[in-house]
Length: 408
Image 1 (cartoon, rainbow, N blue to C red):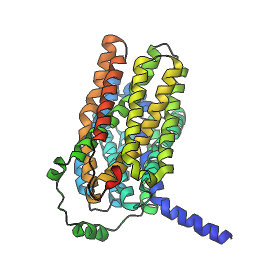
Image 2: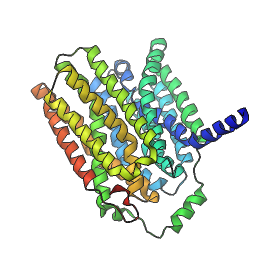
Image 3: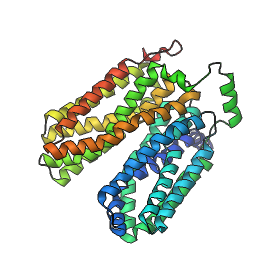
Image 4: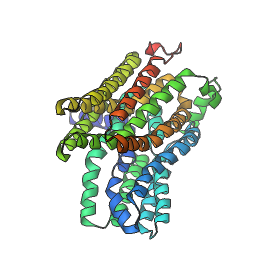
């Protein structure tokens, strides 16, 4: 009996090893970016630069991602991903090690660029394609499991980094994080990732009679509609934490109440990912309807924040927004895997990331300028409600192919 159980457990681990590896990649990729704020003050003090200069680092990361993603997407279509992930782990770790050793701010920028390049190489574009290739069934569950890595990171990494900074210099703590990236990402790629070989990928691509080129994407309404949805959702997510805490404080809440609201959004975000993991590919026949529901829920959340400033209503809004954002992180790549051919997904995801750049880069500046001028974020909430309405319309306009009646 115990032997059968051990075999079942071994089979289960083998089945989900790639998804678990992707969970680690997401946690030590975008999740690691989440602790950037811990280093703003000590780095600014050591190099005698402004906080604004430090905050521009995240905009630099977004810009680099927008430039690299289309090129990376074209490269990885038809190529094995494990070498890309391993390269990303080494480059990201090298960037962290360099940041720990440099003695000038200009070299620190170079180190940050190296780190950012590495993170992009094992980031969402690569991770999502890895899971699409590895899971012909239970694909939605695999994408959701990987996305949970960001939630785990948001809980565990701040505690770890705070402990490191309390016990050592910030530069030494970067060496610890570099080791964590090498062990977690590099080890995960070597020992957990299972993917088709280069020969199998080439056979798949050569047996497909449809010639794929970028110009063909531009004539596909689904490419543009999913690009709009991706740009709206991802740019709003980048604004979420930036504007909500100041808003809560501006309407009279204290820091502990604001933290409680943000924690509730994080918890419901984890619930949104877990919900999609539970539903798995059973959601496929109802995918368009589910996406419309989540978009409508997000729209309602911003409308509630626009019209109410009581604690119960703001709690309701943050819970709704947290759940919707959490669900959409794995839902977006899953929708792409349903709507488009597998051998085009790298390029499509990369181009969608580039479409996200303009609103993601200018949004924080416009939101801050609005707050400086009027003292509130209500105008921003109105703009985000309109943007979410655009996302609802875009999902509604998605077209299906004859071979994919599942979105009707």
